[in-house]
Image (tube, rainbow, N blue to C red):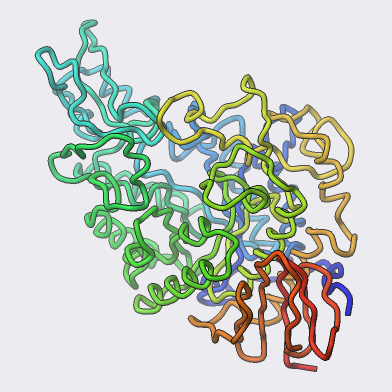
Length: 561
């Protein structure tokens, strides 16, 4: 029995209406596009909306259901667009509102839905509100829309509390007042160029409800909510009383994260979304201590989905994976929300590189590790993820098996965390290198004018052109897996799996007449044959009346003949 991942035929869905299927999001495969690194239409070295629009047929034929676009709003780009100056405008580096409108329309014509990023925790310091707050000085009503506070100490020279920025250093910056004197401090949980909104002020809520309607009226199918857990701060902004606070994230409820007050905001937002036809959705980026607290965000009258970061951070280990799968399904079942599964995104080291390294190094890794091992595990992990009930998220380029670029020169790095100490590692640039489309060209088909981050020479043979139609390539494995998943609606449906007896280090579960087996060990194992092999991430062979599954390989079977 040879490998079961031949090239999938292209799907042509131009006549499919995006409103054809209710609750599409419950088992959707959603593809994250990082616009500056996807495709460059004008040769300036930076990806743009027109580039995304031109590549929509590729995404249609890959077999995904929706496209999530990272921010393309007007921004000084202090944090790659997550510092928004105008939520109703497109930054000129990405195009115009007309380009956004055309992209949405074309995506719908191809049967693809469009989800846009929303950044409600903070704005840019170039936002009109914040500029006016600074210019008008102490007592300005605009300052109440952010967190301005007098400092501590004899002359106000100390920050108002001990909170630390996620990017390192204090979470407070002192301003120079219009008269030239040192003045108040403002809160920024991320970069100083990203002041946090004060969600206790009614004008902030009014503004974001208007922003939601603006993009819904343009036709978007949903929103991914950045820092969804961060909008509400504990009353009085109390000290934490500890340092190295970033190490506590994901382990404790913080006075600035995962406060219960956020849920009232999302219930208001849900009522707005439900006014619109077309089954539109919210997706929460909510870093919480447990999947049980994540489930609070997806109660029936709040958001639809929340990213499963506990799964993303799980090692390639059968026991650990089974634990997080069970906990996730158990947590989502009572609130009636689908589980979500994700292995990579624009903030973490690509999983082909994470799995190439020893476990326990976190989600930002500086070493390449064993490339062959990492790719083998990444392919197996993808088939495991796509066999689980719920919705799956793919990050651009993972279908090519791209590793992180861990050796970028210091002078080209742009991650703001890289330039600040004691915060995130600041190596997110490695997963943001523009993806390759062709074997040749100044940027391997990304555009005609190079790329904003340098691509390694190995990109040529990892390109879409190099892998298309090649049996066994990672791209064709993804195409085949997504085709099978689409042909078998039971794969993404449901809320549980039936675990089967398996050797140590092997996961096996049944879903109807479908069986998935993932061998996470470093050795081949011989297992019973569960029927006809649908797909495998590596070479499987018949042996002694069973099936020999190589190390770090996932296999899909069906009882159907």
